[in-house]
Amino acid sequence: MESYGFAIALYEETELKGIKGLVPESYPKNKIVLKQGVRSREMFFLISGVVDVIKNGITINRVSKPGAVFGEIAALLNTPHTATVQTVKPCFFLTTHDPDLFFKANPDAGYYIAAMLAERLRDLDDCFVKMQKQCLSQHSNPAQKNCHNIAQIMHRQRDEVPLQKIKKLAAQKKKSASRPKRPKK
Image 1 (cartoon, rainbow, N blue to C red):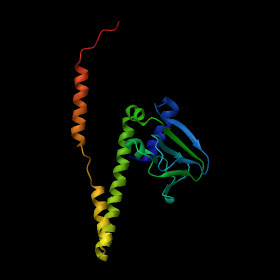
Image 2: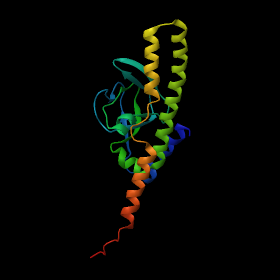
Image 3: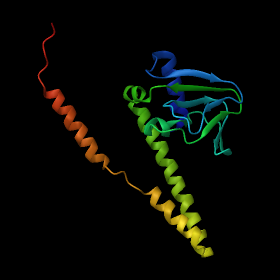
């Protein structure tokens, strides 16, 4: 799925149909959009502009691609933001302040976020394999241990198997749907 097309579709939908949970917002140059370590559930879809992604005071990425998403990890995991996002040029975003409502109203957005995160993990895995080969060729014990630790983290599974959780939720929904409805007064 091409992120640019998705962002433009979101923008057009917001303009025309008012998708629940999305708000158009503009930020001036040098404005902090999200701050590392601060907890919020806001997610930002970049429509135009340029931002820096800063982690522990180091700029790790400069992003200008329409459709780029920021704040998704904190929104999905309900944790503090993992990086600071600061505008380099004036920016226009579509923002959700309630990601639960947004994902319920727009299930394709959940797929988009999942696909984006999967791509990042795949790219990180490819990068890691290259790094691991370098570590092994240098016979560096601390580097090899770090590579091993990273590999374990990257391929760690959640405690509860997602399929079991999905089946459990489906059974609960089915149970509540089978209850007789009370007549309206």
